[in-house]
Image (cartoon, rainbow over all chains, first blue to last red; front, side, top):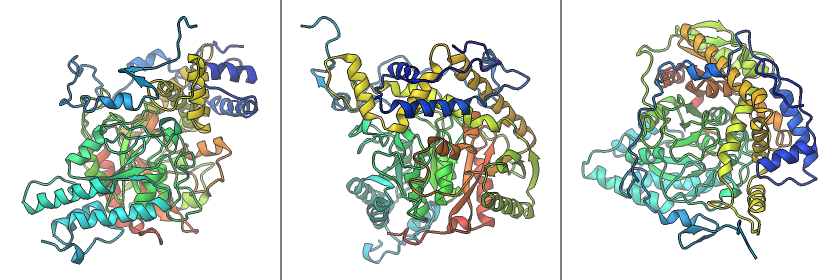
Length: 122
Length: 489
């Protein structure tokens, strides 16, 4: 069932069903209700119909060729790293109002994000 | 000194550059100008649902400071006194930046995005935040947590999206620059629907530091305004490499010569494009030809796949970018004693239906067993689309086609059919996939009095050449000058 057939063919169409939607939702950290599932199955089906238009031409550009993609004029260079130092409040991009970090958190105590207990417990 | 009461304000449809001259000649103060613009936002802007927050107090204070600088003969910025807005997904120190999502309700960035800093440094005055589709995902501005936005030319119709608030403001009234973002057409399509001018710069030309990310290989901030010259002035301010955005670069134009040879994209006028749109853009071609612009037919067969390719890449990147909204660090949280349940319940409650659909598709195309067949294939097709566009641009200075396949539609008409909404993007996504600049301009009004837009795509870095072409068009045709009835405050 899995489409691991390489780059030139779309492979077998996966079966879009409630189980696939539930599994994908779990991966996406989303809850889906039973009422929502038929609509989501239908939507995914239609989207895959659309996506199956993706056909490579004879040149069969490979995934690997992307690394040497033509970059006319852009000269994308990763040589412009900024200094690896913590920006101060007066630096561009520095934390001008560091307390904002906590103000936007749903639960923030004593300088830390609060989460449910993940280890141990009662 | 100009007496506020006696000052003469610019016409409602005046461009930013006309307003700059107006202020410079002393016909009105910046305070009077900003005061009137705030009035427009509070009345028409809010009635259209286009503006979410209005910064009256700070804007008036900045206007007074600007007047004082002008009086003192100090050096003034190139946008001194011009009002500007930022889309709800662009961070501002003042107000909230919630990307029109309940997930980020009340989020205060506490810092200006680089583009906002640059506008301020140029003397422009931040007057408010414009509504958009949730997380910039949409083509009708019906998925904003702040409600629908209405088209100023027909308030029963959508303004386009996702920068629908910015476009509705720019279409309804002049004077200002509006910062939007364009991932698959989100500046150009609403500009076309609202009869505004909108620019998607070359990917990387404008810093995205402070933009709430949607699809990082596609997202680009750009201006919406009355005319191409306004966009040109704004782009001069906004562009340039930013040490805080490693994907930003400084570009130069491929040539100093004006654009004289345009490729007419055959696929932009084929099946699925309304006849009235085709006719109006063909009429524009004739006007340009009479001015000596040469047209050649260009075929871009891969355009047929652009929308499918975009849907895979944009949703994959969105599912990644939006993974950070977990209910822990920022955003909405539902209480739970279990961490996994807290994540999923908070995310499901915070994200709207369209965002959830896109995250699901994006997660699917990236999931084990399907990534090569869908995401990998889309990346390869993207490379082919890019090669095809760049090859076409070897022979011509720019490429031309409509912006939208159809006119602005009624609110609610497509909202229950996501694929019908995605069809809005079929002519705009190509520029994003190729990373090339594109500018949308008002072309005409159709038989129902609805705006029709057209766009030009150019070589990487040819943003200003495109805007010069757009300015030439706007000298030859004055569609862009129209202001809707009722658009004024």
